[in-house]
Amino acid sequence: MLQREDAILNKKVNGKKATLGGQGRHESIPLASDMAAFMKDVCDQEHILTHTHLISFMKLHHTEWLEEYLAAKTNDDRAYHSLMRLCQRFSLRYRYSQRVPCVSRLTQAVLMETRDNFAAAFWDKFRDTAAEDIINVDETSVYYDMPPGKTLAPIGGSSKVDTSQKHSDRMTAVLTIREKLPILFIVKGEPGGSIETEEVPTYPAGHVYAVQHKAWMDKHVWQMYLTELLKLEITGPTVILADNLDCHVSEASVDTVSTELFGILEPLPKNSTSVCQPLDVGVMGPLKSKLRKKWLTEKPVVTAAEKRLAMIQRTIQAWEEMPCDLIRSSFEKALPQVFML
Image (cartoon, rainbow, N blue to C red; front, side, top):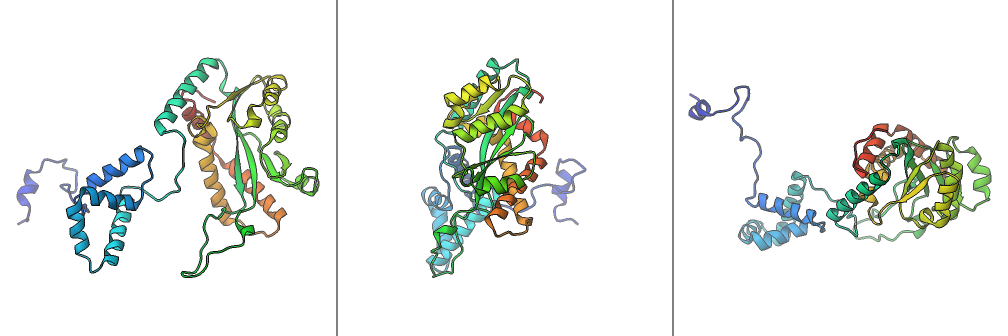
């Protein structure tokens, strides 16, 4: 006789199912649904959420359960660590992970409203513009290795480091999409110095290279980008989407775009590039992921010149591997309207 014969015979389920349902691991704490709802509410309101916040929630709303849990431990130290591990496992079970908080001046709801309003105004203004005549440009930092924010140190020992090792070797890559256009690399160095005269000529062909004191975008480099890269890649009147960096939206920039490129410079709304800029919405994340993976398999180099070349080659390889569908979908997300590139 089966132990659950009546239940099996009377259960109304699809005959193809192998079980009656309800099996599997169950929650070990009665407050699971309440705490999961609390975590969701905190994140929806864009507040910081930590494991200590979960404990505070227990202390406030489930005092009796918490007191019983702590009383079952042999001492306070064990009780604390046991409770922290419980919170950590609970977070993972509900698909939360520890991440560096991204501070935003605007809430997600306001950002989405800004995106929708900008997209509506954009397509009202440029509804007759072909998709291949809409370009987005943005800069991103490229590091030789992962820039260290923390260091491993012996327990009980000092964590002091030489400040010269704090920052990784860095350059700036200027990316442009309607399709994947050539990259402008901004290399740190003295304009007209040995890097520009000796190294730059040896860099991979098909891309453009500029040398700037801090490897940052400035008015000179932006004019170089417009006239020596973008001008050669467009075939007609073009709409250029760019953020509000001073050199992007200066009078000189607007004049160059209109008179030499016969285009229109369309600035993105302030503080909203995370939702309004196609490159930020769908390209930068996958690109940075590819760069990290390629760094893992690279042969280590020592000299500054070798590191600069390695960063350039790595970025070019990652850029070439980016799928074209990703470019199209990033425009569709940032500027909601169904269109084909």
